[in-house]
Length: 460
Ligand code: ADP
Ligand code: MG
Image (cartoon, rainbow, N blue to C red):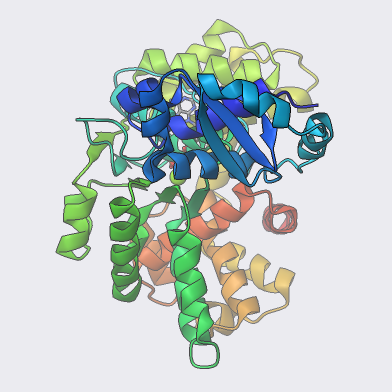
């Protein structure tokens, strides 16, 4: 059974994100829950002044929204003054407990964010402390309620594998847990671009399609867009997004963006760039050696394995490109140790594990063997895979092939573009990231496909 105090406490938590700290402390926090009357939560104000102010629509409406979002069985709030409470108590409903029991039956929403991407699991150091701090600040007070400091939008930029998505999910996890009434939309920009084209294609037969697209992104309290560099060259989506941005911003909703480079280096419409620069801009950089050591240790802790210090140092020193690769190298070492039934990998084994990886890359495998394996796996012909056909089966297989080529061979993106019928490198990035994203989202079929194809390749 949910207690009234808890109902009010949770409602207040939702409100703290929408009201400035000063007003929150003056007019909302002093209210005390008294009971339920005709489905309305009765709150007692300590003074006439608090009652008068909190009853103004600008506050009472917000209280009601926060309450109803969490406890839909309530229909309203009533704010009374202390003197009035005696008469109210006598009128209070007998069914108080019954109603509250019903409320506790409300289905829990499942959290859409990756569980392990939290602030606690993020190693902070010189290369990312500003970004971390900004992300935490925004998570604690999303929207335009930060007073003089403007954290809207929060724009996080930095190279691949340096923790941008991790920070966005950390914000998501935090808000989801602490402000359950807030509606958060996290989107990979490439998916938003897809959504837009789907809506556009459907438009002639279904006028609601574009409306739905707009609603999805407008009807939120927090909008997170990961990898906004994917808006480049998509003027139609840029245009739509510009309006969505302005509407959300105007309503004091929080916008959080990430990109592989700072706004002014992204080839977007000038007015969009200036919006992106209007809030706070923070960079995530490559962690230094100490941070890399800490990251390896933390990851080992999460996996529940013990690794000797010399192995930790070796990995942290050797892999200085990005954190994703560092994690990948550690996984390889752990996997290799398991294969050889070693409980804790030695330095020799670690070197061996990573060397095998290098050999594989350099020697036997070339793009041809990967493309052949993908074609035979999906039953397609090579001309189609490398050509211009856009049917789903071919387009999907093409993305998988691009992903594997990029994953297994260390080739420049431009070269991969050449291999795949002279495609632009942005297309290659798009394909790679789309597959990566699906894998991250836990697409088991795709994961199996890729593993099977990889074993086909090494079997060749
Ligand atoms: P990006 O989105 O910038 O390409 P990700 O957020 O996907 O990078 O990070 C890649 C991997 O590295 C993830 O598994 C993430 O948890 C990890 N990672 C990155 N930075 C850190 C950090 N500072 N502490 C712990 N893990 C990190
Ligand atoms: Mg990312």
